[in-house]
Length: 220
Image 1 (tube, rainbow, N blue to C red):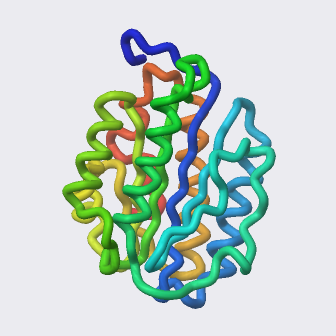
Image 2: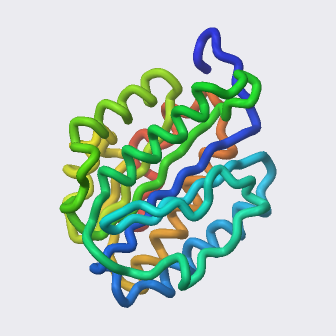
């Protein structure tokens, strides 16, 4: 646990950043179903959770903004529809800034002890205007060092290890998945298991929970 900082031990911050660019066409129902099933399972687990969900294409759209997990509404076709290009860095950078500012100005006893970002994309960055890889890398490394935030990166049709590394995410926190019906379903099952690991672990174990990459064995 971070020295001198008192945090809310049983509270976890979950941030999902999901690609809905044009290349995801044909997988809308699989993505919606996988995400909703994962949230439904997590709603049955013990402990407090705030959930944020950001969908991105050329722009980022916030669907859930730190909603208590019991109040998270299901993702629908009105939310998740594919279009445009891949502004990955703007989505990630904006979400880190937002959550970071909330934590910065929160009372210490209200600040989540554990924070996990889950980022999924099926293509290379090609549309961001506000953030560069260098910008995002600095943001991620800062939150990792100060507050031990965790970041998981799941990519299809790209070298996920390389792209994650360019963002400051360690290789054992990055995975390649198959962008098809089976791969998408498996992706969300693995995400569900990773989220459970974070929620159940002690704060002191946060830094080691994903070391070695065993969480991604089923998809990588």
